[in-house]
Amino acid sequence: MKIKHWQGYGTVNATKVRKTISNGITTLIVRVKGNHECGIRRDDKYDLTNWLIKRFDREFSDSRDIRSLHIQESEENGVDVCDYTFTYPTPNPK
Image (cartoon, rainbow, N blue to C red):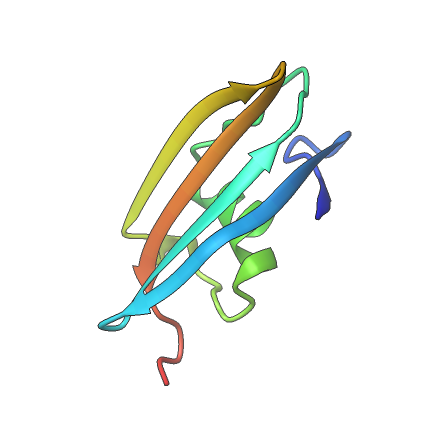
């Protein structure tokens, strides 16, 4: 899906690679692709919650619940790529 860049202008593409739930812990992997003058890497948990997580897990709400964040940067055909891996307690486990 095409989303607005975290800086507030321009767009990038974001896709959910995988979302798994195990023992009350959710692991969400989101891939962001695009070129932007400010880059696509962001490591602020509050910004990432509002920019990415809430788009792919509508039940998640509090950035303080993120237990781990791993960011893998790469490039594909001249386009910047960031894979974000979030781990957090499953909101409202079923």
